Length: 325
Image (cartoon, rainbow, N blue to C red; front, side):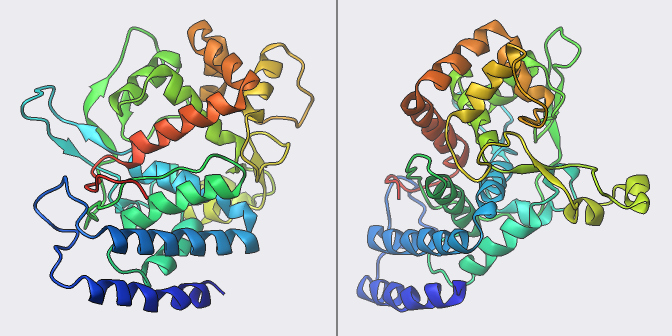
């Protein structure tokens, strides 16, 4: 089904490409010019439509596709504070395909395979572009905001570093940030340091955490004893019981996550209603962050707006197009 959707549009892309012969390709040395806007529009449309078709068949992939986009983009690190000589390493660059053995990336294989199938039929986009587009489309498909993104990312040929080159920490016990993907045990100071390094404000990263309204995480429930002893990647990928952060509509995207956080903080949640991790509850334990939780719980439009800007900040790093698609 996916292939048929793609092939029906690939011929159109070839027509567009042939009609713009002589225009520079995405590898242009000028990063401030959309080298072929029509090609980018056509190709991004195919990716979004193919993603939507996949989700119509399996809506449970929406959360994993969004997580895939975040994990590919969030490994980016700024190596210098010199504004005249900024240097970066890491995503969003498609390196996630080489990082499947990381424990943080358990469950990523399934959404990655779906995006790689789409990418194999696309002209003019990188795998990193397709991952970012699929994540955005997954959000919209699940009822969230329509997110347009920049394109023109370059794909990596090897894994990004799992360890940060520059560690960050404050004076609290759980604030140490030494990995390129965030630890689930970070406290609120650690979250500020981690997401601040990615260019996000407090309000933006609280909004980004609202992605936990969508999807499920791995649990140890029902795992064979042999897996419980080793917890290999294969065991984690095949975990028999996945648990949603918010049990109410785990395949829908809304501001319910923030409403449940407030309910949790007021000790009013029922057993099985939520399955939060430490970084979730950080958002309501910290009074400065809690004001954004309250804001988003009351105003879905404000949440959608802040989430959109946060997602764009994460995935647009390294993109070269001026326009968004």
